Image (cartoon, rainbow, N blue to C red; front, side, top):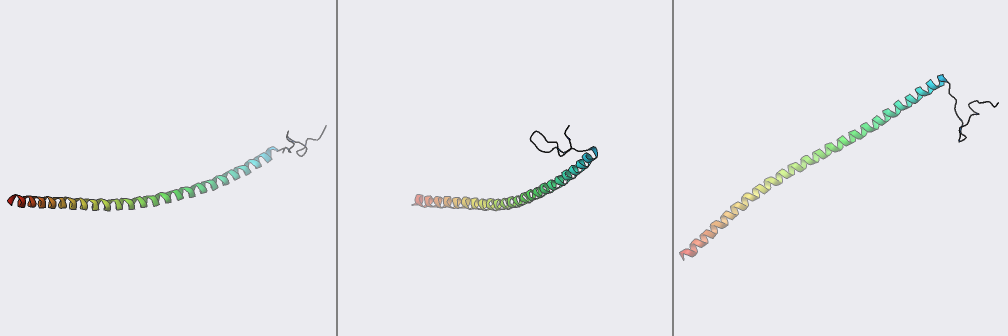
Amino acid sequence: MADKSAIDRLDKNGRPIMVIQGNQLDAVAREVKQHVVAHNAVQQGVLGNEVAALAAQLNDQGAQLGGVHHQMNKIRQLLEGLAVQVVANANAHAANANAVNANANAN
């Protein structure tokens, strides 16, 4: 019968099959766990950086919106002032028209 050592054993695709004893399996499990923990830490760091970048963008956008709000208030104040002037001009024109009518009627 042929020797079934780890080197001699192949899977159906011809790749070597690794035979792992119980104590080796524990060591492999510990190593895999360390890699997973390290990978998760890296991923959390990447996500943390992305969240910080998004927070900075939101902060910038908030500042921009605050500036837009301030400009809109200035425009509103200018429009209110313009409306007052338009009403005053309309009243002046009406007074002039009344004066012209009064002169026309007097003549």
